[in-house]
Figure 1 (cartoon, rainbow, N blue to C red):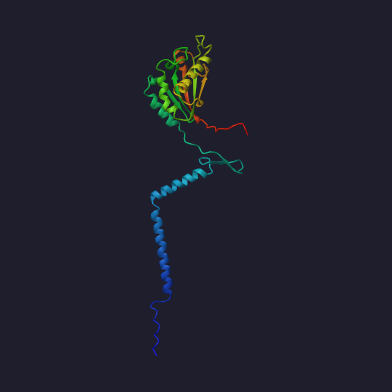
Figure 2 (cartoon, helix red, strand yellow):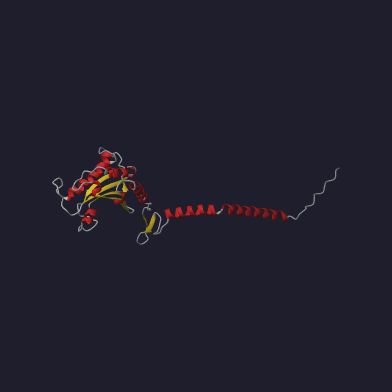
Length: 247
């Protein structure tokens, strides 16, 4: 009968197995920490901060930023107000100045702007003869320079006519009200009829001598007050969907 082999002796204490498992787990833990720290590079941190700022801007509740601007009186709820959008007026101003820089009498034209509008101021005698509302020869060149800008945006455009305080000198226009309005309409008609721009975006107004730039006490001041202003407004044309009254 064969002899039974004696069981081999254990080469290490039993507690060493648990200790080895613990060391292995700690090694895996520190490897993971090292991996996460290497991913947290400056570029990654910057991207993460940008995302945090974006979410903060959208969902924050403070007076400086965010769609939810401030708490209502008594703190009973949140007043939803739209976040402000960056104005496109500076870009329009830049384009207008670049286009008008090359036209005749460019040094007599003025461009003003704020967040709500861009105003192009043209002396009346650049576009019209004295006491008349028909544009004189060469005046179209100035307006044509604006077509690439006015024709490619959806903003409303208003044309204002202004005169000095001297009464109209012909029977065609009984007063400066008719003369200033007729001049504004001539500019609008040029854009709409000659340049085929959308008529729904344009309007004309005449103010006569009621909104002077300067006091009408010298010939130079009166000349400055006789002007046409093309105003590109900040609000845009709204698209109205087709509808019918029939139910």
